[in-house]
Amino acid sequence: MTLRPRVIRPGKMEQIVGQGTVRTSASARHRSMLTAESQGKTFSEFFAGIGLVRDGLSESGWSCVYANDIDPKKKELYDGRFSDNGHFHLGDVWNSGEVLERLTESSFLATASFPCIDLSLAGHWKGFKGDHSSTFFGFAQVLSLLGKQRPKIVMLENVTGFITSQEGRDFESAVQTLANLGYWIDAFVLDAKYFVPQSRPRVFVVGLHDSVTSPLVARKTATDWFASRWAMYVEKGGNSMRPPKLLDLMERIELTTGWGAMELAPPKISRADVSELIDLDDGQEWWEQTAVQKHLDMMSDRHRKAVNEMLSSRGTFTGTIYRRKREGKTRAEIRFDGLAGCLRTPKGGSAKQIVIAIHDGKVRIRWMSPREYARLQGADDFPLVSNTIQNLYGFGDAVCVPVIRWIDQHVLTPLFETHVSVD
Image 1 (cartoon, one colour):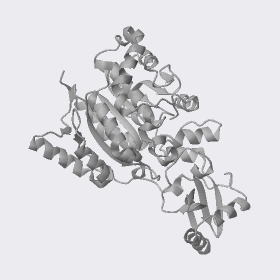
Image 2: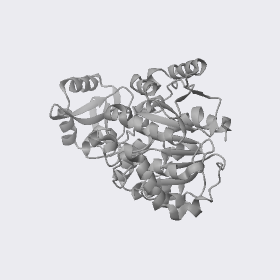
Image 3: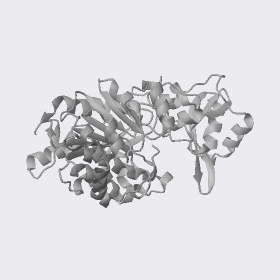
Image 4: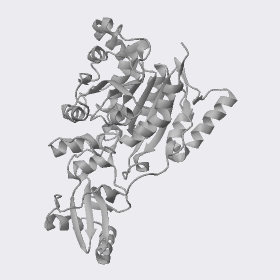
């Protein structure tokens, strides 16, 4: 999500929180209105974007009491899906005083899909030294200032570069920050490809506050029985859910609270082929032959040979293309394995996904449409706006709805239903 740049070094968290306390003291009276206990199955979403986290959680009865983002164009899409009932806060998460003024109800769960740009090549791997991804600490500052009204569960979502950024130091800083706020931490990776024909692995960090407990969570402690139970739960997820790089971090990082784990196994694959989500009718904006030939010429010999073989067979094939830089040249790389590549924000033509359709010896190519982006995010009927780029940005920078539903079914709702206060 796009946020006003404010860089915070991880080691300065206490100083920033202190500044925030002074800056928001005027809202203390308002904060006292928050109840000490959560009001039912409620959640607040930070870096809400167009609201696909809310889409995923609403099916099981979660009620959104607060949403925050700084991008008015994403808010327009959000409002079109949910309507603005007054709880959407269009503003900078660093302005914690404004956040607390708008957060009129305590919530059991808080989600944060904080900006990923600095955790990827697009942001030159700056990590938390960058202006965007470091806004995680703005979210953490809000949690700190909430005090005893902190959500019982927090969930972070980001790209897999979160694990490797700054050789794992950014991930360590984030989970240590949450642990210092009283949360026991679990982490796992889940790919959208289990549910939709899109390759989109994402890291999820779930924190359960020390003021509650659940029999579903095994805590890693020095006690052999608990340690072995934690290890058993972690191992059940396999390399796909807790890959070696993540597991290494979980084993070597010592948290002020500790690590927890739930018994999670990789989902069974249940998805359509990408061809089932692509519109192939003549009403689509198919390119002129000149543009088609240009992209055929941009293919490597191996990819062009594969296309030629499909054309010669006179069969029907539907796939996708990404334009990438390879050895100083722009290449059009095809994919016909039933999956689309990871959707991205359309920063220039190279980041936009392309549809390629081959039928009866003919090839057609065009940009993937916003409706097809929505389908690949599991939000088939999401209301679109008239601006194509605005739609593509919204969906390219969002979570996959069925992924959130799976996490809700296997993690969030079970924790809500089994939690016991230990205050």
